[in-house]
Structure formats: structure tokens, C-alpha cells
Length: 481
Image (cartoon, rainbow, N blue to C red; front, side, top):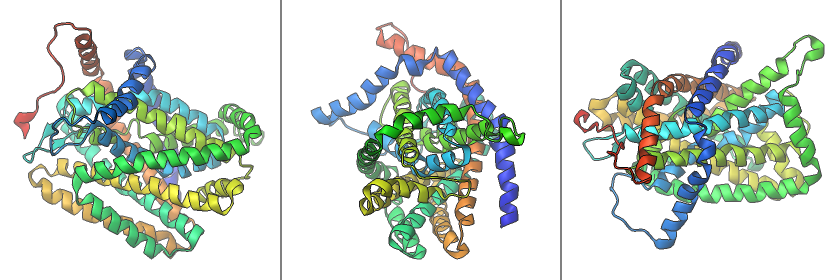
């Protein structure tokens, strides 16, 4: 297993998350943002008004408009997508990026997120535009559909669906492994007990489909994010004098050469970029296309309006939650090295100020983040499986969910049987690799469909201005059902 890990780690670092992948993410993000005249900046206020403001307005007026019984509200779709993005990547992922790539990795997470805001807007908008309904009236959408119908390259859509199923197992496994290691460290709960708890609760939610997942995540997401924000701000303010130095280390180390004296010019920058981009995408999923699958189930007619949730999604995920995580770790005073365990370091940052209360808070927040992500990725994987087996969608969904739960059970026990950190490292590595594989066909499709995206966005704002133009809100794929 050690030799296999070394081989896969080389492939991950030199190919999948090497210079070509970083270039693809950057170039596609810059291209899409430039083509939209940096829509994410110009319309950021509209995004806040439509998402947070719109949800508050609906709650206040108790909007009870009739909904499609097989769809979810825009906020429930957002909550499901956020539950997939705001996970262990926001705490353990950020910490591991700092350990492996230095504080400068946080800077590159910001860079990837800046362009990622529009990338995610594009994914969601196209997902809603190209979605269709199955025979049961349930929406089917996401990159599989806009790749096939938009680019006319079904083989690329099939690759994406396969990679999504693999990534779902990888993402779910990382979350399960994190929960078991956290509870084992904090409360000495055996891994097999944690595995059973995760599988049983996940099964009870997943069996209810998108409707139940949407309702559960709509309750979990606001609670867990607010709880994290409160605790994180307490920890940061307790070490407020160290904040300027933390920011300084982020910017200086982003462009420093960690091994300059050893003759490895640029190694530090390369590592910071690699882990910054890898953990950035792991955290906010911009470029992977996964969130588009959840948002395509939203009870909305306007692709652009649902797409605005993507801008807010990346903002809250990376610029708020990930930044706070980075600051609480960097201001904690905990010394790290290449062999440091990210989960232990993050827990130490909580415990450093709050003592046993910090350990308890960490042991509640992190599992909530992880569990919500497990739910979201069960949906993504099952939808990808349904796409691959169009004539047996119900059976495909059932089989995938059973295998998904069994894999989570197995991975949660992996570290227990190994008795070392290699199991956890292996799980994170597999997740990094599958995330990269998902992003490749998706980013290619986004660039190809950028012309269509611009038309959809222009059409929406022309109609908002009162211009007499035919609505461009759906590719009308009903004849394909």
C-alpha cells in the first residue's frame, strides 16, 4: 500500500494537480470571467440581493406558491450544494493545505475562488438551462446533460459521469474518515461504531431522495455555518494581535521559494499553488460541476437567477469560512511540519483557547460539515449513475446508494485496521485525484459553451430591462425523455 501511495501521489502532484491542471483552471477561469466582463464583480450585489435577500423576503412573507412535488426550493437546492462544498475541506482541507504548501496556499485558494465564482455561476446556469424531466417528473440536470446536449460530445459526458461516481466515493470517504478520526481522538469512540452511525443516518436521509436531502441540509447548513462563524471569531479575537502577521505570512509565502537555499527555486510557490488550487476546488467545488446537479433540481424557471446562488456559494465557502479557518490556525501559535496531522492541528487550534469546550465544539462542527457533504455527494453520484443507465434509472440509483454506503463503511474502518495515518492520507489522495478528473471535461465544456452562456445572461437582463425578446430559459429537452 505504501508503494501504491507513492506512485499515485506522484501522478497527483505531477500530472493531475501539476502545472497543466493549474493552467487549465486559471486559463478557463480568466477566459470565462473576461468574456463576461467580470460578471462576478459587477453583479456581486445582485447576487446577495437575490440569494440572501430573496430568501429572507420569502420567509418573511411566507411565500406559499405551489411547487413541483419532485423539485426543491431555490434555497434547498443551494443548501444541498453548500452541504457538498462546506465540508471537511473548509477546516481539515485548509489546514492540510497550510501544512503541505505553507500559508501561501491560502492566497492561491483565494485566486482560484475569485475566478471560481463565475465558473460556478456558469455551471449552475447551464445546468438549469439544459435540464430535463424524467418519467416521474423529477429534474435531471448537471454537466452530463449540458456536455452531451450543448457540446454534442456524449463520450465526454460519459467520462464526466464516471468520474463523478468515483469522486462521490472519494468525497464521502474523506468525510467518513474525518468523522471517525475526530471522534476517536476526542471521545475514544471505536471506528466501527462511528461507521455504523454514519451509514444508518445517511441511509435514512438518502432513501428519501432529493426532497429529504434538501430539507435536511436546509436545516443543517445555516446552523453549522453560524456555529462555526461564532467559534472561529472567538478564537481569532483571542489572538487578535497575531492577525496582521498571519495575513503577512499568507502573502509573502505565496511568492517565496521554500527551498531556495537548497537549490529548489520555486518549490515553495509550486507547492503553495498546487495545494491552494487542489484544496480550493475540494472546498468550493468550482470547476467540478457537482453543484450544478443539485441546483438543477430547484423549482425555478430562470437559469441566471439560480446561477447567482453559485457566486454567493463560493464567496461564503472560501472567502469567509476558509479564510477564518486559515486565520484561526495561523494565529494559534501551533507549530506544524510536513508530518503534522491536519485534523489534530485544527483540533489543537480550537483547544488552544477554549480548552475542553474547544475540543467538544470541534467534535460537533466538523462531523456536521462532513455529514452534510456525505448527503450531497450521495445525490451527485446517484444522478451520475442514473445518467449512465438511462433505461434502468431507479435500479441504478438504488445500486449506487448501496455501494456508496458500503464504501463509506469500509473507508471509515480503514485507518482503524491500518493503525497509522496512511489510510487517511490515501483517502485524501484519491479524493484529490478524482476531483481533478471531474474538472477536466467540465471545464472544457464550459469554455465551448461560453457563447451560449453569454446569450442566456444577456437575454435575462434584456428582459429585466423590459425589452421585447423571447425568453431563453430552457433548451427544451422534453423530447429526449
